[in-house]
Length: 226
Ligand code: NI
Ligand code: MN
Image (tube, rainbow, N blue to C red; front, side, top):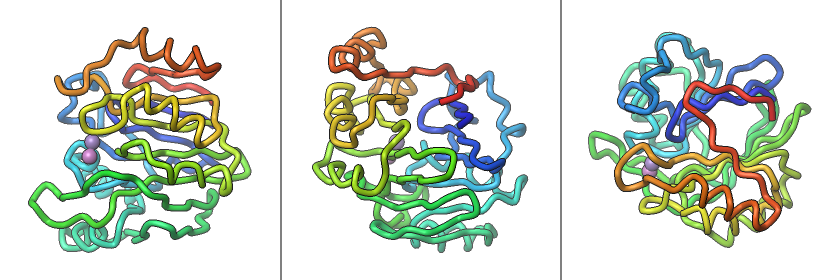
């Protein structure tokens, strides 16, 4: 699968020719200043939760591309009220077969207020299964024992985990998360963007390597095959 990192927790995966974008936050991210948000293609936009640093560019990209936005029921209503009608509401525990594969919404321990103070419903992680491979995006979350369920849903090719601490897991907890979900290839997200989540890259990579795991820290704009 082609994986493109756009900085913070924003990334895209291409499956069966569909561009699937996650948690769009580019315009206000200093570290992603080399990424032109107006060139990002999307057939789908998945939102893990309603915080600004995960949805800031959602409305503009959805309007330009016509992408279907997949999110909690509450965020779906909020988007509908702002003129984004191509949405698919889901909630934790549910799954849906899309044209590229199946997505199951799983528990994330976090919060989910929208930028105007509206309630965003439960935050979520996503388990993707497809003919081209399987992966897990944890969203913003603490380390949680619920992650141990994920191997029952899919044998993962890779997992996308937050590692920045303060608002989410740190790298050490993410190593434990990788063991819970039984995945050796981890793409780190949600680090360095703000003062609160600056990390030591070498130390993080070393923590994973010690356990025989590979941590990928990509540059915003970087595409890789994984
Ligand atoms: Ni958040
Ligand atoms: Mn966040």
